[in-house]
Length: 327
Image (tube, rainbow, N blue to C red; front, side, top):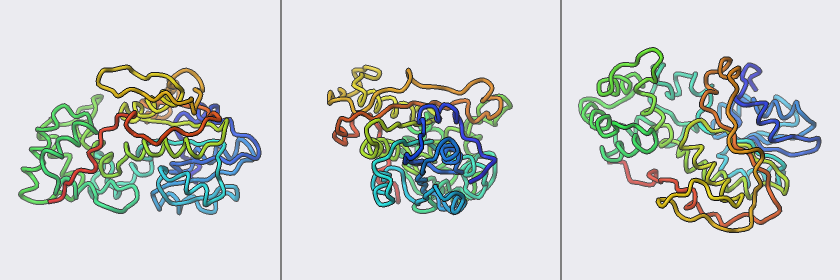
């Protein structure tokens, strides 16, 4: 575990989890191990760290006798925890999205600020971002950019990508940045870079991040013991919307009533809220770590009620990952 890495909202996450001696907790998005390290330091606990990235698991191995590491996706955390002797769990923390060490490594292809292979795969397996931009139909590319990146000019960017790839396939992040800038203009200091939304969208699509989050919340509901705590840190509205709606339905509340959304179930609440709504970073934390600026923490405590039917519909997640996209 990297001693230099300090995860966002760390104090707030520890307050929500309230780790106690003898408890078993799950860090479903291990990354650089910041949350796991803090939980182990807070009490005589045992922590199960899960990550789909093999480099994260390799970096954390052997760092603490009370830390157990498993490679996998956190949507399977209930199965992984049962096999590792961590079920039921007393607490679960999830830090959604890409990790700092993935962004900082140009060879992983996550960052538009550093030239590298156009990859973006957290696990290193399956189709890469280059495969998507080189093979996906224009209409699907536009959907990815609009729905997962909230890019207002998604169709124009998708059209430019398709036109450019006819000459030569995309291989480098700098090539994609150049195409986006040809449509949206070059980045300027103090303003969000025009490639930000495109890179976010492709990363989410390549790693099925929203589907993983939705299934992961259901897995957490199954895994937690009564009185077990769930803490979820998100970094943009697409993620936070899913967590907010899940916890609202499981706590017996209606989240954001809308004629466009399906009715929420009325089963016995399987969670009770910890605190009131989302918690954001302090000004001091944002100054220390600008990445924390958009972070939100939502937390809840498991009740003794059985887990709800595993139905993703109430989360209102747009699923475009199942669409056929290869030529």
